[in-house]
Length: 142
Image 1 (cartoon, rainbow, N blue to C red):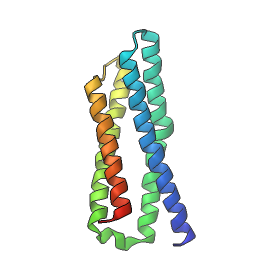
Image 2 (image 1 turned 90 degrees about the vertical axis):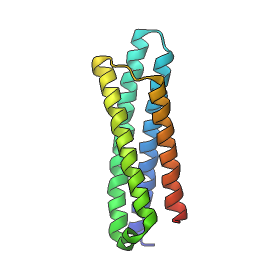
Image 3 (image 1 turned 120 degrees about the vertical axis):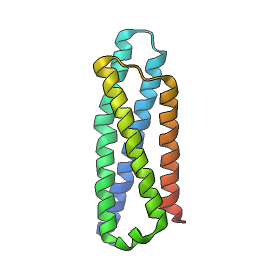
């Protein structure tokens, strides 16, 4: 492994941890918001969820994508592997889940549009399952 490859791999792993961690933390805050009765606290939790997405999840996603490109440039033969195509498909679904959560949080903060507890549970579950499947594919490379 070259040092450039190792650095790209470290960035890729750190990026995915920030991305998924930020998404899950935002979901957790929003779940707490649903149980809160004070309007001021509800608003504060929604704003903090938005901040987590902006400060952790989205920069983590950008780092992940940039590092992925660097990894593929250093090992272009991986593009011929089926496991990588499955992994990339799951990443696209994770991006869609991120966008749906972001739109929901934006609507909550700007217009007060509620996000149901069921939708939050589903979003959190999808994120966790996608993350586990992506890690499995990256490590096992079936």
